[in-house]
Image 1 (tube, helix red, strand yellow):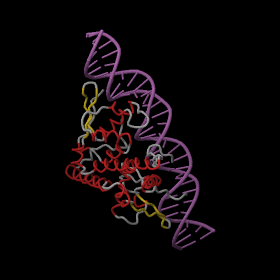
Image 2 (cartoon, each protein chain N blue to C red):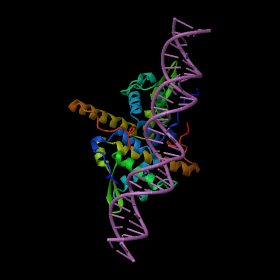
Image 3 (cartoon, rainbow over the protein chains, first blue to last red):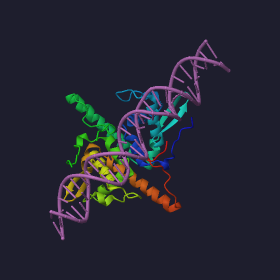
Amino acid sequence: MRPLFHPSIEDVTVEAILHALSDPVRVAIFADIVGSDCSQNCSNFLNVSEKPIPKSTLSQHFKALREAGLIRGERRGVEMHNTSRCAEIEKRFPGLIMAIVNAHKVQLAGRTAAGKASQRKPAGRSVRSKVH
Amino acid sequence: MRPLFHPSIEDVTVEAILHALSDPVRVAIFADIVGSDCSQNCSNFLNVSEKPIPKSTLSQHFKALREAGLIRGERRGVEMHNTSRCAEIEKRFPGLIMAIVNAHKVQLAGRTAAGKASQRKPAGRSVRSKVH
DNA sequence: TCAATAGTTCTAAAAGTATGAACTATTGAA
DNA sequence: TTCAATAGTTCATACTTTTAGAACTATTGA
């Protein structure tokens, strides 16, 4: 178990950030870490989606967020303590994180409203499970 | 050759936008379309990267941008006319596109400066070609 | 009608992602 | 201590997505 890799802020790229946050599970995790910016560990996120997510998958998602420079993971005894690197990223790419987190709120609000109004499922196809 | 698909603005998702713009070639294309928001066709982009990009790949990139709702493609005689859907997206997700395009400018500026100062290649590993 | 041009679609290979199983590290009890 | 429990990582492999050459389609102008 080699120590976790965290890129230094100059090595953080927009592409990596966008890629990391283009996955619904990862934004959910990230939004949560940003929201309550304190103790957060993997097992809290076993149910971010409808289906429970296997822990190996979750671990990979955390790795993706870490390596994109979005979060910092630190071992606290037996579990993991994750914090967002918002402040650093804000300096490097002003407004980026805010805009993305905001857009997600808008989208979620829209979906909730639509669901309440007509009890239908969201129309948008998932990026990941799209059939070509 | 079925007519090109364009999602209606309500069906555009943040995930799809981020995913589309998490590819260096696609942001380059998109930034270009946004910048000079007029006639733009695929063959103008055969050299956006160091290596020339095959036209089938380019076509797929344009498709990705279209299906994410970022651009609109319209046939103009023998070639394609692409325009950004920034205005619509700005209404749905205020500030999102601006922040992303901006972040890319910052990154590009940083890389150019670093290159001029020390003639070294950018340190960041590509998201796409990362070895695990 | 035909050649040239611009782009799409098809297909197979390459790259990336998900997940069960095995493994590692830390803690707190017996 | 030693050991079981807990939390997370790594490995192997199946599955999905992306890439790019080849074949195809649509439009134009000679």
